Length: 441
Image (cartoon, rainbow, N blue to C red; front, side, top):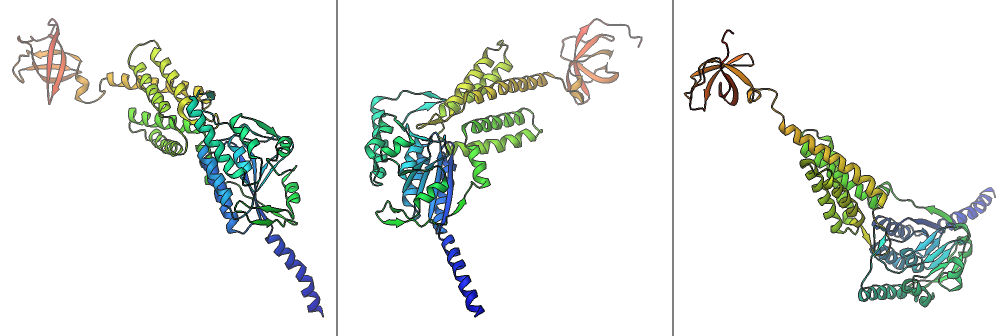
């Protein structure tokens, strides 16, 4: 009897555990600009949810937009996901602009919190925050292709494709209520918990036409954050960080080449440069910006060599700032190196390079402070007459006696002052610098 009661007591607990395990909800997040590392994080998260047989994937969104290639990678993962995906612009005050608008409408469920907005998805070309004019024909091609891509999945999701297209063609933006009234999103929710409550028992139509009823009476939320690797790489691909790594790498290698044997600047510079090359592979880099940065380095070196009263130095700073602003370009957002970062890096970099180069040039003019070479240019006195014949004379330099020869046509008499021109073995070549003096010494 007691065993039967225990079995009855255990049965509801087992059913509850099974229900909980079948109601796992994976929580992913888009917070900031959409770039390759973020896309990798989202794609991996969606695939992991499928392997773990999760009931739902919820992607919260707060983004100004991002790169077209990264956006398409995320949308492709959402459309192909065997697990239903809900996109949710949250919390209040967030936005899903530009590329975020495309991602929002691609999911099985699109939701927004009150006080959020979406849209403004017209393709634009911005460099350093400045809009670049696009040829009309090229602009039409870009807009038409972007609109066609949006329609390709929005209409199949049963949403208002015509209204959604105006966000691309006319750069329209929509509040959460306007998006709901316009049938572009499915619901409003104040929080993820509210969203899951509204979705419980709801039947949705997947992208392939199949239907799924969501059972979320006891959802178990599983927030998935970026791994340490993804967080590190996401920082590297930020335009400001990429620019700083590029300059630190160049400065470190420059210091090592001009001051060999220091090692630390070379090691730091090499590591920074490799990381910058990784970011360069991930970001849409404009090589015009790279050329301007290289030109700036050349101008700084020339400023150190020639007395231009700062003209070349100022030109180098201007060139580096322009190069930074042109370095990273994005067709969907103004993502690029900020003006503040460009100025903050260019000025000290120019000063450091000029100082280092001048130190190198000064060191080249220094005489060697040890060995025979230190005698070159020093003056001494003839002890025995010096003639062009090898080893014919004797001079005293630095209190030392040296065999001496001269390239002059005439011999140098005893007591004359001479200057050392060359040292060969134990013989110095000298030239007269003054008349003979008393040989009392």
